[in-house]
Image (cartoon, rainbow, N blue to C red; front, side, top):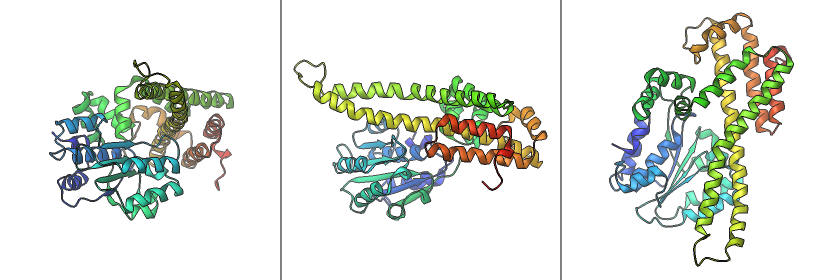
Length: 385
């Protein structure tokens, strides 16, 4: 058993990380990159566990078990809650990074989505990368090295991950979660190689239901009114799913703060003012987290639709490539026969445009209304846009 067992199809990267954890070719700053679903954060957290484990990541000792559970005192796992990572957040992080490790030789800082750092925040982080505190290791994650400021990229040792095969993802779902083989294969294919998404599809009936509703929309854009109704449904469902994810986290965060201040403990009086101040700061974090989770929900809608029209284009081109949505082949073939490849390309283009609009803070309902209306009549999207 090893903490690296959760990684799929990354043998080269695992070998490199294991060598470093054993004391060979270790360095203080790493940049782990790879396409969505390749396991960037999984790799970083496995490496972090191996660094604090006296046996290089055995997966069974107290240090490994605490690391896997996310409670190891020498590992900090940072997930930017908002769309960007601010300079104030970075300064606070660097102050914590200066603390010496407690149980192991390393104080490991894992930062996901380092591409979300603004220029000023990246400049602050750069100082710590250049002169790290003794025993501190930075593990940065991003989709590609090009997404990271060159000043940071040049100071990190890079590990590049690749997209795992659908078969390897399906095997992992079966081995680790007991998913039946056919459902595992379907989930891997539907997730387009994204491991986390594949797990959600395989284990959550609501996720599969939402996906089916989205993929049925291209066949239901019969009128402008229907487009408006479906746009409202997309946004309402995304908000509902976001609430189900973040509300338990918000409740737990407030509970943790009250516990930390001794609220309700005999002998700890007069802390309500401090608690209110801490909860107020927590509210900003909660808003940022909700904004990011909601953005992720919208991205999943757009990814599923892109996959659907990719399949339409496959049929129209006469290719024998495997369809992402093989179970929907009759509907895909019907749409392929009643539209042109040029129209399909315009529909794919408007999906990209919708994502850009959402990132630019265009009203989500309006953005999805425009997208669906264009699905209905691709000529509304000019060839030069």
